[in-house]
Structures are given as C-alpha cells and as structure tokens.
Image 1 (tube, rainbow, N blue to C red):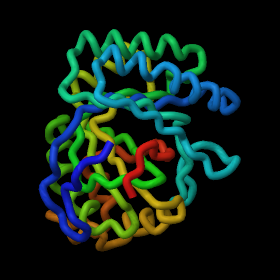
Image 2: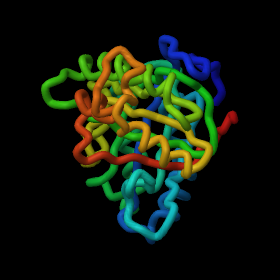
Image 3: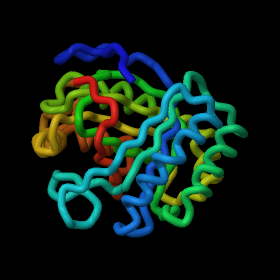
Length: 261
C-alpha cells in the first residue's frame, strides 16, 4: 500500500494520520511449527479481512538471521515473533465485530500459536515517512505506569517521533501506530493473548539487517536526542525510556510484503 511521505529526508513535519490497523504478532509454539503457522496465517487472513471489511491485508514473515534464540543480540535483532497478521481498515472498527472476528481467527490457528507470548492491537497510523523497503521492524511500546495512555501517546509523538523522522541515520520509512486503548484491551481479552497490551508500535524500514547495527548504536549514543524538543544526555533510547517500559522489549523483524523503495 503506497502513500505520500509525511516528511522529506532531514526534516520533521507533523505526521499525517491515515488508516486503522489491526495487528496480531504471533509466535509459534515451537520453532518447528513456525513455517506451518505462517502458511496457516496466509490461508486464514482473507477471512479475517472479509469479516472486518478490510481495505487490505498483509502478512509479515519473521526473519531470523541465524540459529540462535529469538530476541535482540548486541543490537543485531532477530524476530521475537514468527509472523505478523495485519488488517488495514478505512475507519475505526466496531468493537463487537472486531472482537468476534479476532477470536475466530485465533481459534482457527490453534494449537499452533503460543498464546502466552503473542500480542494483538487496534491502532491508527501516524505517517512520519511512508516509504517501505525490504526489512520491516515493528516494536511494541508499553507506557510507564505513571503515564496515562493519552499522555504516553502525546509524549512519544511530540518528543521521540520527530527525532527518528529527521535524524535517524539508516532507516528508510517510519510510522507510529498509536493504539486505541479500549479496542486493544478488548482484542487482547478476546484472543487470550498474554504477551502484553501495547500502547503503540514504532515501525521502521531498513534496506538490510546490517543497517540496524548503526541505528542501535546511534539510539544509545549521547546526543542522539539533541535534535528534538527534549534533550536527553543518555540518548534517544533513554528519552524513549522516560515514557515506555523498555525492561523486556520485543519486536518483529520481518520481510516487507509491499516495498516502495
């Protein structure tokens, strides 16, 4: 799905608001079942899309660089999830319809899914830079307990998003998915997923996994947050840590199904 970029390279405009998305991040019960889970998701996502009157659906397959365990390793990430199922909607979905459709979708995937480690959300897109390339990195963000959901969204969009949009050294595209708290909680309860209830997702695209190493090094370097409204001597990741609980981060690093660049 293509759209116009909300920013030009090196600048940070106010992000444009676009589609709604339902995002399910799925982990297989074991590595041996991952390929089967991906194929089942490919086969079932059309029915989920039809039930929700989706304008598009996407399947993002988790990329694992080597035989090691899931999770980030010294800034070189491997996917914590095996596949992401995404449904694109033109408007905010009806709660009852979304809950029913998601529960049926997850039931059809059982017993392949590790429900205790999977996650689902209903979110609105904020486009900082709408370019897509080969690798999609989508990381859930959960607010710190002293913040309300709305306070988290405002702080993240105002203080972190512009820095990523304007100063990130290697990313190609950047989108913030801002969760609808009510619908995300309802979706989580309907699926029985235990991987957490996100407040948002940062979504970045990279040309290669090698580009992710300098991205991580930049984010933790002193001064990387200096280009934004709030400076944090510890760097951009420390600034994000003011708003989001980064103690147990997860992410999907996957293959973008609809690249534009």
